[in-house]
Image (cartoon, rainbow, N blue to C red; front, side):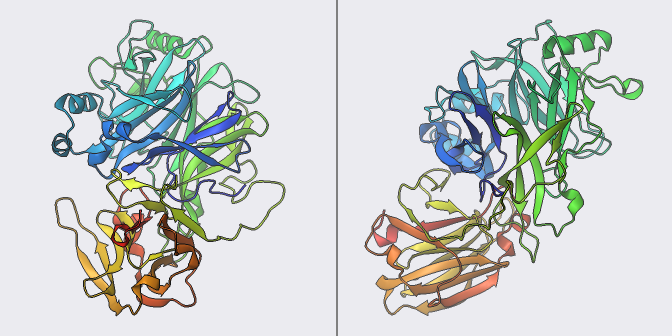
Length: 548
């Protein structure tokens, strides 16, 4: 298999081995895009099939995706199977309340979302859906929720929030509390104790952004079955990203382990009604979770800024019945020149071994492998791909009223469409490149190149407008390559003729017959310059051409 296993924007992966389907099932974040929370399946971990999107149609509206800001919407899902049902826990973020009311959402809907701080649960009988919910988790606080069912049947909701009493900037804390899997509301502890219990604040001094937590109890060979493991990302989803793991001895259940610890070391939490299992000051050695001394178990931050894959972290573990233990995580492929990212965060995998009850990621290598398997084969050439209306990979920004977009999934990426429509390469509302025919029948190229909150987006024409002799038989194209963005015109490819369902053609390089209209540096479209959490998308406006 080749890394990444899911190219283009597929961030924050979470997966399970589904014994019923006998295959791995993986879900990703989707932010303000719909359909949302794409689900892929695979039996061999090398070949993945997009089988469903958990959030579409009316569910997308109930999750306020129609009024989500740039890089808002659906953050960091966790997928698990709980009591015979598939469960996804997630957070919807950056919702404009006034816009929501104006768009027809009720005040009661908005209040329920706000009471949960955007945290919700959706469930389904099958991966393909329909997915039911959202069940808003009142009292939840933070992002990156996890759901974990211990062997005694207790189900826990765990997530990260900014530290209530931080010792340094960027410090967060991971908390947990039982949750009722019938109502999906936070519940009391079996010992009758208070609600939230603070589990972790980071691996060491100055540790920032301990997030993406997952609780596990593993069976089989390698892990300690008497322990509950806590795995977290750390360092933020940037160059310092990493993955840490800890464990707590809990042979009689995690809830019992927490109660036993609190009986011996009663520590109040930072907010009223909370408890804590992390000692401070003279009690610093008294903590429930003990960290792996080899932490971080995965990072690329020590490989230098020139290493082509950066920002590695936000991981999830899984056991494959034939292939053993595996980890999935996000990573970022950067350009060779500017060392910036256009593709967004993608999904990678690595094999995992176990030593002394601790996971070892990519044994003998210590980083994400480029290829995994006994025989190394060259990458398959990037052949032409025709994108038609109804393609399951099409995405829409805040609903289907937007242009249809496709993920940019290669560092050398070309998209071609009929000149009668319009073409766009988008990073967010404020950063993009647009090619269209102007009022005089010429190809014109415009650049959206930045704004801050509350300011008007700056825009400018680039290149020189080119007159078209035969618009009906002409195509327009955009190529993203080598930190350059090139707009061009070319004869209409055969793949785009005589099929009203065809939206665009994805190909490699630029046709030999192309005429360049504009060429400029592309870094303004990178995540580093534009900000946010998504990758570039290529979209086409086919309405002007009378196409679907």
